[in-house]
Length: 99
Image 1 (tube, rainbow, N blue to C red):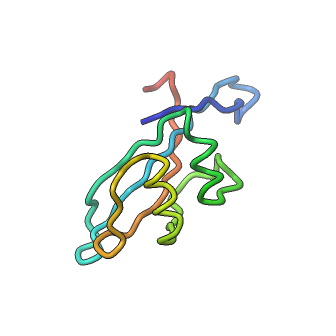
Image 2: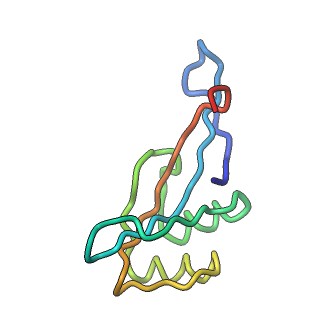
């Protein structure tokens, strides 16, 4: 997973969270994960802009439209299949001290 450090969320502990992003593909017929693509750190800003994410540190998954998937597939150089998969952009955070 690509990592982007963010400012400390708790000033008393002075810790940084590491935020990463990935595309998750769910099989439409089964809702099972069909694949995961990490977004490389140098492409995170462009990828978030492409899908219109304004709060890049909000954790969770964002369902992507077909047009957003095609744009990300072009940027990240993967072959999309929107008829077979539902795509989500996932924001993850981890504590590098505990990792």
